Length: 230
Ligand code: 6PG
Image (tube, rainbow, N blue to C red; front, top):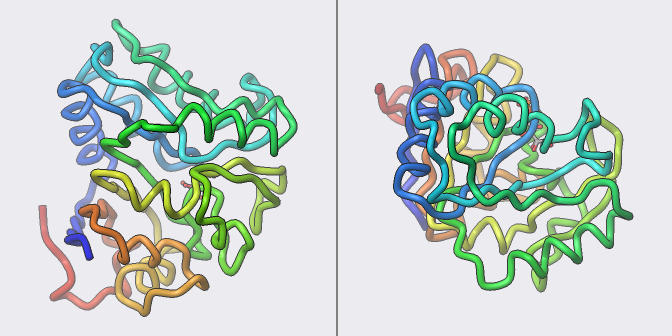
């Protein structure tokens, strides 16, 4: 089981921006997340490190919409990170405009043999990661790196997502979690038993070190000795 570091601070997006900037400086494959939380970290990472030419950018999941759609995780990263960089990474987006299974198959092939150096994840209030939702059939997919399916939460559009094996193979996993609405999920994911009821907890079964950057509200239900102050 990989080390799990809990880093509680008033500005976890800044801490994650530093992590992203450092990884971009070193190069390697960086897997980006979607959702509402990471945008501030992406904007700050672009300021800290405008040269991502040694890195490649991937996504942990994507909604099955065109790349310019307001729900697109690619569009989020394009607007808050990629368009702000002086030197861009190789970009490997999930083609959400395709049929879900076709997009998943294409991305699975693209990821073959790729070492994922850093995977950034958010955490859903139900404990989902990427588009792997509690007790979903996608959690049982162990023979592929990418799969597709219907979400368990808004936005209710078909998804393409990395699988548990793909995430567990990463060299490093970093979470960015903000807000009291995530406190119960944080407690279950990182303090409770490892279970498909809380997909994030399944990553504790892997070898990759996991660093969780979160604010006080998201950490509110963790007991104090599980915390590391930045
Ligand atoms: C997505 C994300 C998803 C996200 C969580 C948290 O496609 O929505 O990949 O896994 O990280 O749902 O989202 P928020 O940051 O919006 O709370």
